Image (tube, rainbow, N blue to C red; front, side, top):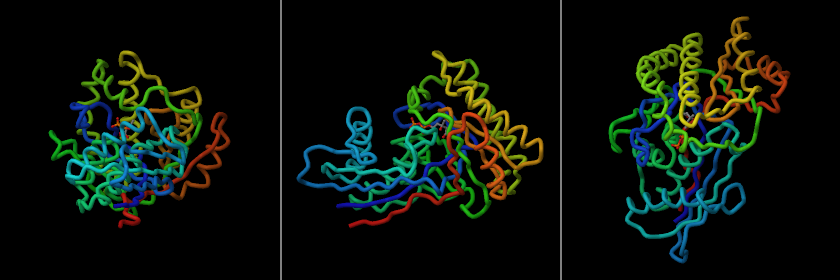
Length: 324
Ligand code: DP6
């Protein structure tokens, strides 16, 4: 009863921030993202009748405390569905630094949803897997389908899952993650989501999301980079406005984050197809047409404060590597 799966993190153009039901991770709004092929989480789950507790090994180190509890609660949901009462060992390896502003929980829970369900013999379709992954980490539901993906917020567990908008080869985009601070973030997204509703700006952000989702869908389907840049930059600014005006306020950016943002805007004005977005961390993600790759890498690396740049094309969804 063992299975291995891989999944990729994703970067959202239209962000998920705030839940109407935190336990079920039913989001306040829909969101749209693309998967990141170059970054990968590989997870093996083995259920074993001889075990008396779950174990979680992350990047070669046994996890404990909250980290293990989150994985174990997630396995409870899979055990419940499969009607099996077996404990498991979960071994997960990320090909990229955790806590680098790249949601490792998204790829982690997408790979875990697929590996754990298959290890217990459940052959679920994409929507079922996406719903399951969502219970582990909201954005993980978007790492199940391939390519460009939209999370349909739904109103209950059954109708809140992600679907593909376009396959990975639909549009040759890249994400250049400018690492300005590789340290773990002080306030994780789960705690952050709970603060969204303390911001007086939150209702305004939420009210604007449907129009931005529509523009983002259009931009992707028509491969309209100018439109994608406009709507992506508007959306992350709204999310950070909510974060900054929450109580207590959440400030994820550093001065180096601002330097990257400022330069990307000026490079776009000079005619380069680049735009920027920032998640719940300090490291900006620069979204670009693939033809800008070399130019953008050189320009980003030359900025003070940028320690490294990770580059990724658009990626596939979660995939089973092995099951027996
Ligand atoms: C800022 O999915 O990491 O990256 O459900 O608590 O695990 P949990 O939150 P998570 O939140 C992601 C927030 C974001 C925006 C996004 O990816 O849409």
